[in-house]
Image (cartoon, rainbow, N blue to C red; front, side, top):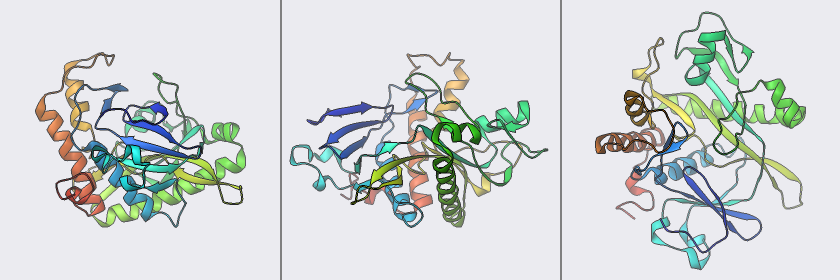
Length: 302
């Protein structure tokens, strides 16, 4: 996808951010895929559309829990010079937010890095955890497990809530935890109603000004997508082993099988691994959100 004639603010592993005036940002979701913090050479077809469609769905589903930064996903609402057909289904026009320097992670199950820490030390993000848990166990109740935001090329660092208080201040840390747990509760309920478990997810929160200039904490970036969340089909869940997620797991599994040192450049991905990953992303949207991706802008029905 070629660059846009707007000020380019940031290029992430998946998204490009452009300035639209002083108070808005345009987020463009590509089909790029990263694994182990390295961007693969092969795009995953329609991945950017899935991330945008799923974020738009969840922003609407939880708008009464917390507001968000989204203005529009319609190319017609963009400045005339960037109303391009190849952006359909991939863009979010958003209010600029002053982002919190902490990622807000909520875990309902013990998996991923939380399981590794629990297995080795009996804690989760340095905090006490119940004894006797096995891999993929459901926690007695969801827990807020923040992390710092790493500089480019580094890894995020899991931190305790007390450390988050030191970084954010007590009132803001409490507000971030309360909002994150409330979003997780709503999303878990909706996911389980259609046969999925939300194992964990991470949120980005930031401040935007109300019309009178008062800053308000809102949900920003993407939300509850396969890139930011771990979804499991209920029928696959069996504590003692982590089930396949509806995300980039086929790529991770393939790369792990090679003994790759996880440094650039990455190995080439076979077509069947790319196709399997694209299928998982599409299934995540269609089964969890209950809509066909073909009906989202940019698809064959557009």
